[in-house]
Length: 388
Ligand code: GAF
Image 1: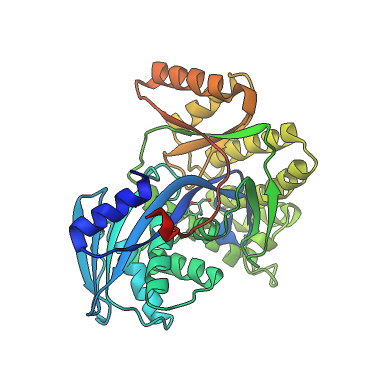
Image 2: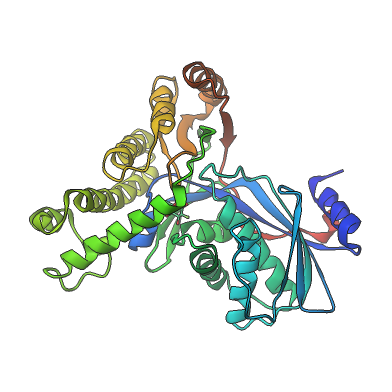
């Protein structure tokens, strides 16, 4: 039985009827970390790990949601204005439903069966994948014709306001706009993007440290507040700036005295990271993967020392990666405080890289890492009913 017919089968067993099925991918970010909420540049790619949502309509305006991962159900009435978050997995789909309603999609009641293969807490955007798959399922099954950009914004809003994580738009955007074999050079201010081909000779190797950090979401919000504080202070002498995206390295150095040491370090990461993304894009277009790899190494050091979102296991995974043959670049990916690293590896060496890195990491930590050899995938969409 294929994965899709299996999901449809389990939907039928729980809710009866034949569902429509939607899927949304997780993502890996090649470079440009924590830049999205600073109106900066990032370079994510969708990956072949999906969240699947099987959906069927109901006659009332209730959502009945079941998650295979959590073996748990949740209910919500979309016409109610009094729904509060419960700090559990169901905040993601319910938050998205509420945002769709606010945006004017009049939702019908629906049964939703959700299953995700995106590793959770690994920095690979399992949250965006569930939001996007739910948004597509609910909007389309209510007869809406959603615009992908609007959907990305609306999913981000659900996470900011209902879930309470002040994330940027990168993850939702790439889950909806990902392209097979390409990374996206994304301008997080204009939301314009350029597709950059990842040569066949290179594999994206994702190494999950298997460490989840408890403080991830509060520290994330704190980093964002630090960046906003930097802008507030710098704007007293640079009145035209709206975000750290607008600040040059020279301006930052000139006005360093306005910032505390910590806020200066945060801002320095963002300003230099934006420049690294643009340089990496040029390198990729010129076929210069070595240069791309150098920018990745610098990005990791900056995230570790200036932005302070790495951890011992991420640093170790990166150090060990650089001891292997065939690696062009390695760095932590995603929000940090645990999760995964992204490695650009010579395709001919990828198998050996995976094996040796896994063993070396296990030897040092006692943890068995999950390591995936990937290529960029297509963004979210419906799954053909002929596959059901
Ligand atoms: C998380 C967030 F969801 C993204 O918006 C982004 O800020 C990322 O961390 C860091 O680059 O994935």
